[in-house]
Image (cartoon, rainbow over all chains, first blue to last red):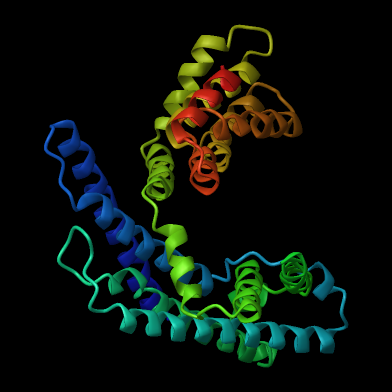
Length: 159
Length: 180
C-alpha cells in the first residue's frame, strides 16, 4: 500500500504543479492583453482532480473528521459493532458515489468542454476512483478491527 | 419543505453524533434529500463536483502551497527576525513582534492555521528564549494567528465569498479595515 500512497501523492504534486502553471499562464496572458481561453476551465478541472486526490489521501490516512465522543462511551463489544456499522455505511456511500459518478460520466461522455477539445465527463471522472477507494478502505478498516492485536503492526496499535 | 429540511437535518445530526465521518454524514443527508424529494440520483456527484468547480476556490491549494514554500525556504524565520528588529526593543517587544510577523505572514499565506503552524513555531521559540512562559507564548501566537483570516488575501474570505455569492474584492476591502 505504500506504493499506492506514493503514486497518489506524486499524482497530487503533479496536479498542483499543473494548477500553478495553468493559473500563472492565465494571469500572465491576461496581463499581456491576449488571454488564453482554456486556462480558467483547465484550472477548475485540475482543481476537481486535486480535491479528489486529497480525498483519497485523507481516506488512506484516516484523516476524515469524526465526533467519537458518544461512540467511545460504549462498552468494547458494542464499540466494535458500531465501528463496523459505521465503516459499512462509509463503504456504501463510497459505492454510491462511484456508481452515480460512473453513470454521470457515461451520460455526458459526448459533451465537449467549452474551451478545450476534451469530454466534459473528465470533470466527473475522479468521483469513480474516489468512491472505490473510500469503499475499499472502509471495508479494510472494518476487517482491521477484528484482527487480533498481535497481528497488527506497531503503528496500527498506536492508532 | 420545512418538514423535509428538519428530517434531513435530523439524519445529518444523528449520523454525526453516532461517530460517522462528517463527509459521510453530509453525504447521507444529501442522499436522503434526493430520495425524499424525488430528484435524479446523478445530481449527487454533479453537485459534489460543482462545489469544487469554481475558479476562486483554485486559490485554496495555492495558498497552502505558498505557506509551505514560506516555511521550507525559511522565509518565516526572516519575517520573525525582521519583526523582532522593529519591535524587540519595546516593553513586551517579542509579543508585539509575534503579532507583527503574523500580520506579514498572513498577507502571504492567507490562513490562520498556516500562520500558527508556520510562523507560530518560530515565534514561540523566540519568546521562550527571552523568558516568556510557554502558555503565554502560545496564547499570544494563537491570538495573533487569527489575523490570518482577516488580512487580505485570506483563504476563509475567498471561500465565504464563493459560498455566499458575495464580492471577494469587497470582502478583502472590509478585511483591510479590521486588520489594520
